[in-house]
Amino acid sequence: MNAALATPLTSADRCDRCGAQAYVRARLESGGELLFCAHHGREHAPKLANVAVEIHDETDRLHEDSKTPETAG
Image 1 (cartoon, rainbow, N blue to C red):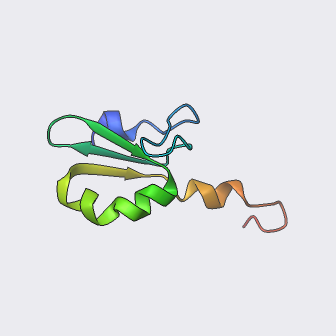
Image 2: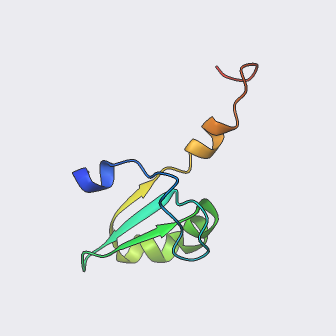
Image 3: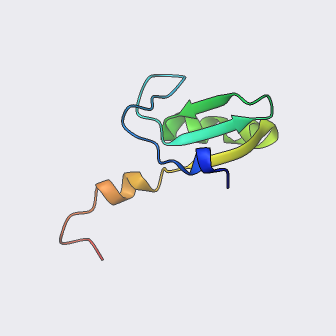
């Protein structure tokens, strides 16, 4: 994995589609990047798989944030 993509996404990273917090980063062959929230990341996943060189998906963090001490494993 590219070191630049290994950098975790933060709350400052915003979805290019709607402005929500980004959980998916796609690097394109051209060198550009696209950021998506979980919703738009899922919506565009088939197309991204065809054009992205790398996809960094942190949507699993959404489930971690919702854990309470009673449900944490």
